[in-house]
Length: 103
Image (cartoon, rainbow, N blue to C red; front, side):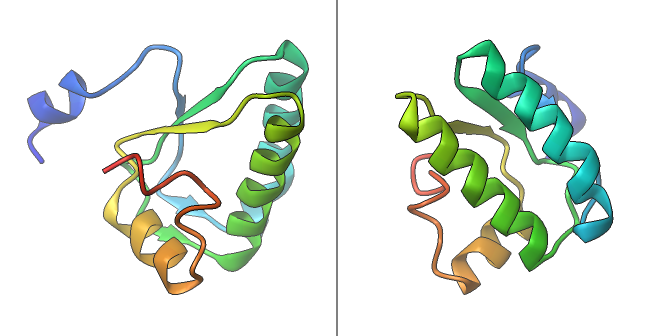
């Protein structure tokens, strides 16, 4: 994907995810997601920069998705990135994390 293609798909309100999403980043993002959940709207994630995501972070995303669903909201993806798609597919959680609609 070229820089201009990435920018064309970028949304100003999307949470820009870093290259590494591991248990080390889970605490920081847990706080950020809690704040966004309290705002009462969908959470939009841009995962284009992600090169590595571990199971702990995928579990966090799943919990966020479940919490949002309880209030009729959801996770939305902009540029989910190959690393996220591959890891989530390996766990069989594409549908639960709304990645089937993001492609």
